[in-house]
Length: 135
Image (cartoon, rainbow, N blue to C red; front, top):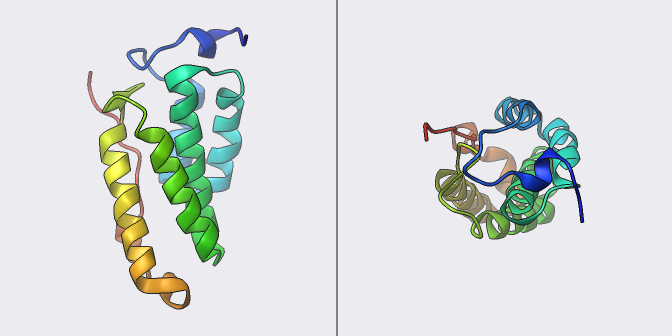
């Protein structure tokens, strides 16, 4: 069983500095870096926090794939990330999980409607951002 601060945290706790760094990286379109940062939190995490980190990591890599022209990888990981996030309460570690799910579903719908050949035309304004909320 993992031990350490991440294994005892719950969704009601405050985010770690490492998570806040990952959020800043995600929102700055540094998706691969976000993946690397959050993977260090994901490895020892359990329960809801493991699902949170896995969901954000998959969304980050989905957007990384989109930017690199990998349509199938982007769509598949958007689905996967949303699947992990759906297991969580609406807010976890101050993150608006429900809002992130809505954004990820919206960008996936737009990608699918654009198709592989039009994926580069995705409106940059629809790229998901992680929003923190007061609790």
